[in-house]
Image (cartoon, rainbow, N blue to C red; front, side):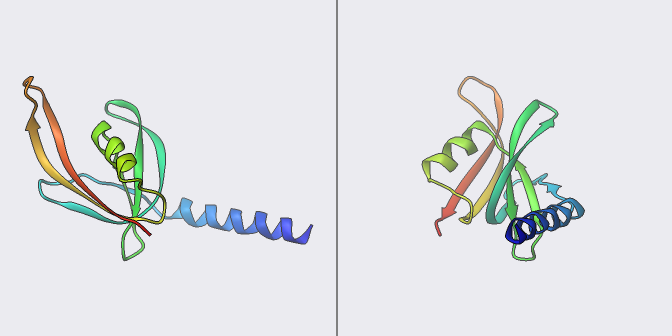
Length: 113
């Protein structure tokens, strides 16, 4: 029972820490990178409706959330990114598809644990 209580207390303290630490949403400029440890994801509602954000912790311990585009989702999966891996997401700016639609272009690198 004491172990269960300790686990609950640890979980509560971890949640308090997370709740008191603000998570910034990445608003990149062209050629800006977000680099750090992939620590998870969260579902949020933004300008374009409900979607997921990837959570990245940098070398200073700051957690930043980045909206996951379909391209980023596919490439995180293709590179088998899992929590604990290092990731570098670089915003390449606005591009235009062959069909003439504007989109946000990114590059992604994953350094596996």
